[in-house]
Image 1 (cartoon, rainbow over the protein chains, first blue to last red):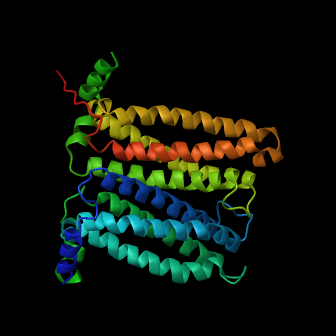
Image 2: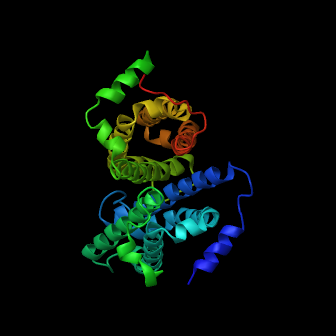
Image 3: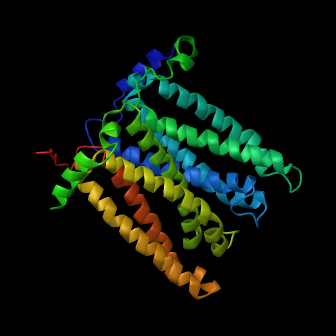
Length: 168
Length: 166
């Protein structure tokens, strides 16, 4: 269903004919990912009861937020051209689709449940709940990063059983 | 002479051939390397931003450093073990990569810089907000960013010489 769209993306030739733009965009994407995960993990570790424990969660989260959002914007700005350059290859790759679904889940979770827990008044959220939310957040986003690395490295049909056919 | 050593490693390291030839071994190592790098550098960066004075300002720099340290160490250990294993699997390939050697050199510098941060800040509690600490924090960000970029660039064929066993 989305194939024509992916074919159109690839036709745009975002990088022109230069061979340096692709790797450069890739490296900026990586730096943005490091910043995003850093800003994410200081809060998640705090939710789990470790790291910056002498501060209320909301204080840590408020400090981390501009870096989290700025890095996310950068991830999108560099991720879209990287996708466009190899769109039809990505479309055919089951690992790419698992990453995208998990990314969607991560965004949804981060800006609903995790936001509410991180910015809740002190004492409003039980420590068990906070720990669970922090751990789940770290697991989801580290998995997104791992899947990103695995695209184009493990066989394209590795997750065909999970996202084959109609799921796309 | 160093080349002879790397040739010898390529032949004699136990498990090296297995990692080189397996479908998932090398991929798994590289993936764990990247994920642990994110944990390490992500938390180093949060600390550095505080040192420089542009982020996480509600937390004291000394707390930022001390309390994130155990997790930075976790990331560093996994990153180092998988990094060594990657070279273990393909010693000759990495020997021929100019970017790999630059990366190793800059990692030594980053280590020295971390030592300097430690020396500056053990002097007094106020040293955390000194210009020297700011500079060391900025140096840490620049060094680790370049190290990350060089690691990524190693994957391409630029500045690469191919070496063979004989």
